[in-house]
Image (cartoon, rainbow, N blue to C red):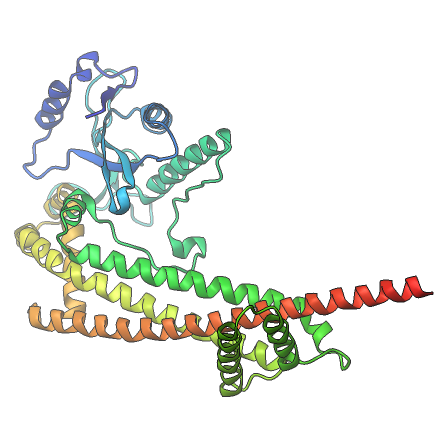
Length: 443
C-alpha cells in the first residue's frame, strides 16, 4: 500500500475519515441483506509520471469529479504489478458509498418515488391503497453518461499532464471502435491472471491477449506498408507513366545492374541474381508489369486485409461471449430466487416496491437469461458444445492469421519493389543532372 486516504465533502461527519467508522455506518443504514453499498472503480495511472505526480493527479481528479458532487471517496494506491516484459502497471482503487450525504450530515435516500399520472394529471391507483410509481435514483452517480464523463475527465487530466511535461504520449477513454482505430481490443487480465502468467502458467486470457497482440502487429505492419505504397504511387505514377520514362521492369533491372556493378564477390552477384529472379517471378505470377497493375495489387491487398479484419472482429466478439456464458449461468442461478420472488407478488404496489429494492439484481438476472437463451434456446447449457464452438473459432483464427501472414509477405515484396524503383529513379535523376551540368560546362 503506497497511499490510502478518505476524502470527505464539507458536510460529512469528520469521524467518517476513519475507514472502519465509515463503512460500518454505510452497512448500518441499509435494511436489505443484498443492498448495494458502494460504487467501485479501478483506474490506471501512467508510467511516464512519478508516483508522487500520479498520486497528486489522482487526488485532484477525485476532489474535482467526486467530492465536489458531495461523494465520500475511499481510495488507495497499490504497489504496481509487473506485466509481461517487466512493464509497470500502476493503478488506484476507489470506493464511494452509493447513498448521498444530506447537508445535515445524515445519509440520504438512493431513490425517490415518481408517481405515474393519467391523462388528467392525476395519480393512478395501484388497487392496494397506494398509487403506481417508478423508483428514480436521487443522484446521477450510477448513470452510464456520468461514468462516460468521468472517464473523459480522467483522460483529459492525464493528457494535460503529458503536455505540461512535453511528452508525446496521450490516452483515450474511448474504445478502439469509437476512436475509429481498426485494431482488436484485448481483455482485462487482472492481478490473478498476471501473477499466473509471470510464473509461466498459461491462462486463457493470456493466450487470448497474445493472439490479439500478434494479430494487431500484423494489421499495423500491413496497413503501414499499404498506406506508404499508396502515397508513393500517387507521387510517382504520373512521372513513370510517361512514354519516355522506363517501365517498372526496366527500373528494377537498372537497380540490379547498379547493385551488381558494386558487388565485391561472385557470391554477392549470384545472390543479387537470385533475388532479382524471385522478384520478377513474383511480378509475373501476380500480373504486375506497370504502375497500374501494381496499384491494382495494392488495392487488392487493402481490401483483403479489411475483409479479414472484419472477420476477426466477429470471431473475437463470439469467443468473448462464449467465455462469459458460465458466469452468466452462475449469475442466473444465484439470482433466480430474486426473480421467482417477483413472480409470486400479486399486487402492483408491492411488485413495484420489490422491483425498486432489487433493481440491480433483476437487471443482472435478465441480462444473464437473455445471453443464455440466445445461445441455448432450450435452457440447457451444453459445455461440450461451447468448447467445440470455441475450438472451431480458434481454428478459424489460425486460418485467418495464415492469410494475414500471406498478405504481410505480399506487402513486404511490394515494399521491396517500391524501395528498388525509388533507388533507380534517384540514380537516373542524378545521372541526368550530371549530364546537364556537363553540357552546360561544354557550352
